[in-house]
Image (cartoon, rainbow, N blue to C red):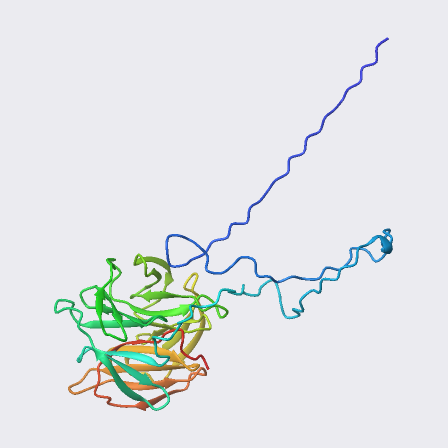
Length: 322
């Protein structure tokens, strides 16, 4: 008599999932500026109140855990790398503006509304006229000209060098913003009549991140905020833009803006927690007026008929945010 024993083998398949970490760093290398390991830890409670293990068998833990009551899983990672030793040494923390008629860069002081000449531009006789400007932390202005070229201008020597920018993106406004409120690292953003993009200033390649309803100028700050002005909308408005997808996250309506059909040139910058808008309307002898816009949306003309034709305003992320 034989006994037949059936052995039934069971197999288990374990599925593994990977968490992909991506970073939009303005370039093709895809390297994140922010360390993944934030150094933040959380205390864990025992799974059960009663433990079968003898407490005497446990080794004492003399390592003190850092107190971090305010930390949550949604906290932004902290950039632990210090900025360069000479960070912001070569850039004023005031607002730079560019005059189209004089082809010169000035410093605008929001505390007294005065303009002081930085220097005249000499970027070539075939570059056309300047149309927009941004300012980096390391002492350079980037100026877009009407012939679709972008020049790097040393703000100390006023030396002008053409960049390798060669993209059919149309006329655009531009501004820098830090990656978050906890890092000094920033990126350059540009916006044309209906798109917003981030720029790799090493290669001058653009990556479109979203859309905007009409022509705009951009400005940003050290709190990681990116703002756009939309003077051709009705009503005109300032909008905070999500730097990942271009979505509008906050809106400030501008009730005192000139009629859109009357606006010839416009520019704006954020400084000290407020916004500074430069507008020139059409008309013989007309020149740029300066408006201050509070975070609550109160718009006031602080300087009229400046005698300038401001087409670009740039503020570095070294500027104060309050």
